[in-house]
Length: 396
Image 1 (cartoon, helix red, strand yellow):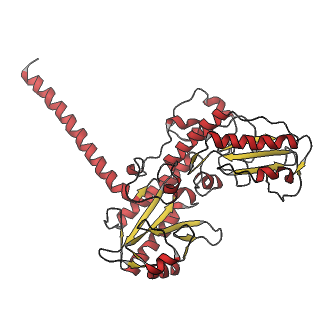
Image 2 (cartoon, helix red, strand yellow; image 1 turned 135 degrees about the vertical axis):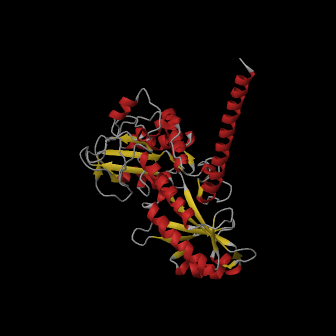
Image 3 (spheres, helix red, strand yellow; image 1 turned 45 degrees about the vertical axis):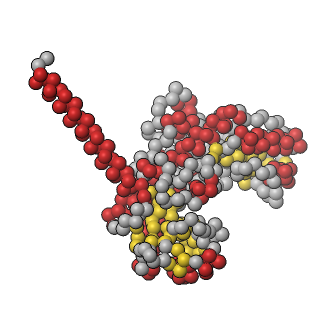
């Protein structure tokens, strides 16, 4: 091989390396621009941070922005159904929820999973065997809801729901201690994951013990679930939801050394339709449904209280949109954006990102696209934003 050929080969290698390095630099530059305005909350095992996510340095996942929402390949089992314990009504879709994520790897048992009915979006008054651990009880004779008194009072550490129906052809009815009627079938439902993380072995064991303690008094046969399988299902579901959990923040900040008096802020916020909530932030609530559309929290780590607003000032506030918990996240983002612009103008402040750079209309349009991407990522795995399923999975 001649010296010229060797030189050409070396030059080609250096060129490839140079192009690769340039592309990596460009990607990191874009990521740094996207990250400040789109944050994935802290890991789901850290509940306090998830309830009030910071908009500064985010997690590794959050630093990547919200352009790519893909389920962990190991989480394919997250929505698999452990047999047809609770057959869904015929009116619901019968699709395999796990297969909805187009990038999940093929599974040897996919054909079997696809043959099992799975509800894409259940109403709030139905057991959801895709995100809950279910135990079915069939008493020897129909029983009243009062027979489940100890079950209603059980404290598991994860939401527990009870449903009953008069016969296999009837609709399930959410049960409480004062629910009238008698029920031939009863199902206990324990949520497998929320923003506090996946259900723990101890919580699942307490759930089984609670239901197992009721069964002999009915009396009803009792078959406990496969605990290891349910734990694996819960952890997969939690990983999937952590990938899809996105909150969008818009910051209204007073330029240094200015500040906003708490009394002034409260007056402007309440005039804009916000109300001070017990959680230490202002909330904009949809009157018809009572749903929180978006929130307003302190740019500083301090919570807002009536007392703190009367005595102190702040340098800014953050408008926060919780994508998963909103039925129309893109439309609500548009509404929140206008509210943030108005407040910035009223207070003589600026609408900025986390690096204190002004957000122009082009940047806001990009964020709007990210909101839409986040919502579509949820729908791809049959979690409709704002639905009962989403509200359960993305609660603290």
